[in-house]
Structures are given as structure tokens and as C-alpha cells.
Length: 451
Image 1 (tube, one colour):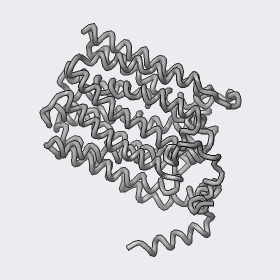
Image 2 (tube, one colour):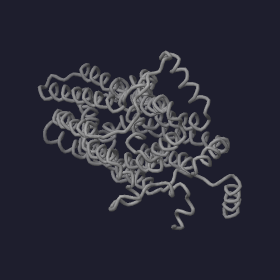
Image 3 (cartoon, one colour):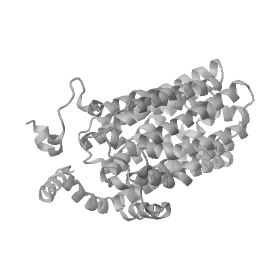
Image 4 (cartoon, helix red, strand yellow):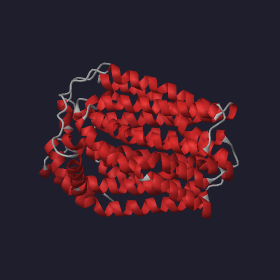
């Protein structure tokens, strides 16, 4: 027995590691997750190309920060409205089948964007309509993907690693996709980005169909949708750790994450660049996010992640303020990198803690509220950010939003003692932390060692 195994009893329950897979990538020993990793990794590059292409297309057609925010609002508001209903149905249905359908519909949406753009008949109303369609698909897709994670990674001890690897995959795509999009837009047009995205969905659909799942048949609930919605709300609002984490996450999404919507304004007006500048900025954010995700993948346990959440928020808020104040390209790149690191570290840590704590029968509904906090609040933030930028300019908008994130972090710190008191016995029962007496002794030692 290694010293690490002795210090972490949960490691003793893990099956033998597959040869060639290091600890940091241990979730990849699960065949279904490997398939998902390969297919989704390809598709996400296309997704990020589409995000950049859509932003640049709207800005090229309108030169309006307000319309950038409006299009983003249209694409994300369906997640706020429909995510709770999606959670109810995902708790009832086969999650893989839901994902196959959502990916197929998303492919059709991207191909329509490609045809309209390449034919030079794309207009802002068309972009708004197709953004709403994509938002409706995302309400079901994001909730299903979050709930499906536990079915792909059968060993709960590897779940946190799977979430971290998934974040790494998303942010590798965030690094590659925007850079490719910036080059492609500069050479050709946004339509080719949409076309590549549409084709890339084939990879993730194929990976889902190739999975071999050993899951008991889904039992449809006899209760009504309204009753199950109330159950989900009561569970989330009454469970202090999940409620507190989701509230901070909602504040971060509302005030912090919409800075991405204003990126074309920074690239063109503040830094006096073009689509390649936008690609570099998004790439820098991807580098920071990838570094954060890789550091989380190297962790052996979820223990301590609750404290990581506010630290990540501090990084995110400080990065936003620095980015808003910067007028130099390389300083802006550094600030965006820091913001990306804080944003993804907080997001992945929140996801991991929630996935660890939630009861399986409530997973779909709880993750639907996670989707609401992550994507559902962003449309209001995008509309707010676009309106503020129209009045006071994009730089001061981002500075104020970063300050709001820091206020949210300060509130979260005041809730930490109560959250720890609730989480500790749950972690003890799961074997994640030692029993209370040993834990108390460790805390006393830690307090004595602090300066």
C-alpha cells in the first residue's frame, strides 16, 4: 500500500489502472468516456469556430455592441426558460438517446447558418431565429451531458477526473477553434466556420452510438411534470451547499461571463485589430482555461474543492478588471488568460462538487439548475453588458462586471463555514474525508501552521 492510498481511503476501492493511463487521465480507462472524449473533442473545435464566427458576423453586419448582446441573449434565454423542464425529462429518459437527437438538431442548425452565410443572404433576423433554435437545443443538450457523465464514468472515484478532463477538452477546443476561425474568416468568410462545425457533429453522434452502456431500464415517473419540477426546486433550494454554489455561479454567469460577447469590440476598437486579434484573445483565454482544467485533472480527490471555488472567483474578477483597463495587446492577452483560468477552475470545481453531492434520482433536475446558472443567466448578462457598453463603453463595462464578481466571492466566503458543516458528514460517509475526530485534529494542525 502506498502512502497516498493510506492517506486517501477512497483510492483503495478503485479498480486496477489501465496500463499507459496516468493518474491525471484515469477516467479515460472507461471505454465509453474514451469514445466521448474523441468525438466531443472534434465537435467542440467546430462549436468554438461557430461562436467566434457568429460574433464577428453580427459585428461585421451591424457594428453594434448592443446587437452583439441581443443575439447572445436570444441564443441563451431558452436555457433559462426550458432547462428545468429538460431536467425532469432527462431524469425519465435514456440520456444517450437525448444527446443523439440534440447533436443531430445542432448539426442541422449549423448547416443552415453555413448555407445562408455562403449564399450571402444571411441577415440579423435569421441569426436571431437560428440562435433561438440553438438555445432551445442547448437547454436539453447541456443538462443531458452533465447528467450523462456519471453513466460514462462508471467508477465514482473517477468522476471528478472525468469532469476535469472534459473541461480540458472544452478548453483545448477553445484554444484551437477561435484561432482557426480567426484565420478562416480573414481568408474566406464566416460561412466556412459554420460548415466545418456542422460536419464535426458527425464525430460525436458516432461516438454516442458506439457506446456500450449497462444501465437499468428507465422507469418513467408516475407523477406529473409540475410535481417533479417542485421536487427539483425544493431539493436545490433546501440543500445549502448546492444552493450556495449555484448562487455564486449565477452571479458569475450574469456579470462575468458576458465579457466574451464584447470581445469583438475590444479586438476592433480598443486594440485596433481584426478577426485575427479576436482569435488570439479567445486563444489566450483558452490557454488559461486549459491550465486550470489540467491542474484539476491532477487532483486525486474532491476534498478541498469547495475552497477552490472562491479563489477561482477572485482570479476571474481580477482578470476582468485588468482586461477592461488594459489598452495594450500583450497585457490584454495576459489578463484574458488569468480570467479564463479563474472562470474554468470555478466552473469545473462547482460542477465536481455538485455532481459528488447530488442524489442520483435528482441528478437531471439538479444539473438543469446548473445549466440555468451557467447558460441561463448569461443572456441577461449579455443584454446588460451590451446595453452598458452602448452607454459607457466596453472597457468600463468589463471593469464594473469584474467588480461585481468580486462582491459575489466576498459573499460566498461568508457562507463557507455553514457549507463545510453540511458537506463534512456527507464526505465522511462517502469515505472522501476521515471521520470527524481525525478531521478536527487535522484542522487544528492546519490552523496552527497558518501564519
